[in-house]
Structures are given as C-alpha cells and as structure tokens.
Length: 100
Image (tube, rainbow, N blue to C red):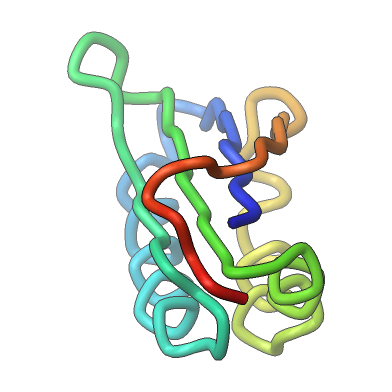
C-alpha cells in the first residue's frame, strides 16, 4: 500500500472555498481504481490547517491520481489559497495488508 500524508496550510479567508474544492476532489478520488482511502482532515485547534490521508494500492495508482482531471482542477483552484506550499510525506502502508 502506498500512502501519502499531505499537510496544507490555507489562508484564513479561503477556508470555506478550500473545503468545497476538497470535497469535489475527494468525491472523485475515492472512485479511482486503486484508491483505498482519501481522507481530508481539518485541525480542531487551527482551522487553517488540513491533512490529507491518501492511500492507494500501488505507487503507480498514486501517480495516476495526479494525472486525473479532478486533481488537476483542484490543484489549480486552490494554488493561490495556500498560506505556504503543501508538503507531502510518503509511507509504505504495512497494515492492513493489501494485495496489489
């Protein structure tokens, strides 16, 4: 399993628009072949902070996600709303075991 945890910091005036754009990206991402989870979390302590938990069966599935129209639309839509560049960290998912 290929997991990416993405950290995003959004300008305070763009929080609601960011959440709406993320919802559309989420709804399409969970339909992708190879997608196992696509969770979007908002900090309870700082509403400008978000975390994405993206789990795909394989690294290739994760790469394919970044080529989808919904991802490209999301990326371009939210670019100016970022307080700082997004930061992603990749992990090898150990459990649950997923057959690729």
